Image (cartoon, rainbow, N blue to C red; front, side, top):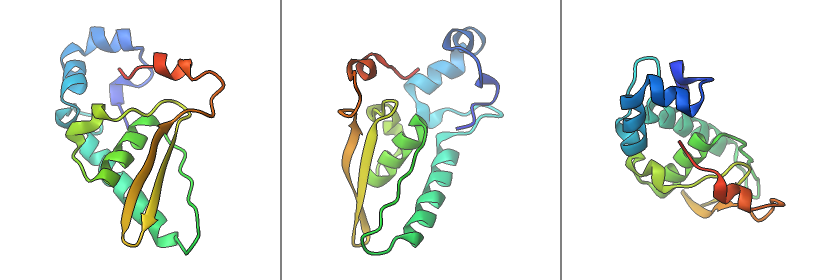
Length: 131
């Protein structure tokens, strides 16, 4: 997600310089709209195109691995579940977590979300927080 003027800033700096937009991002991410910053709807549209392109490459028994950032991981989960961006903060995707989606016929089923058992110290993920 392109965060525009927020890119490269610490959370404290964003809070100081952009308190109202940050509050909207935290409470209503689906309504977040700042000039020069992508909206979740714009990012989700890109994600959907990417998933469709990946699905076109799937053959029986094939596996596609996507390595991405948290925002994309969350939007993928929302897409697979068929729910709106309003639920963005209801999905947790820790750094280095594994999410698994499986195609069964025409449907994609989210079969695992935010699995972190492979990490040496899973407590690290519990301490990590979004914005």
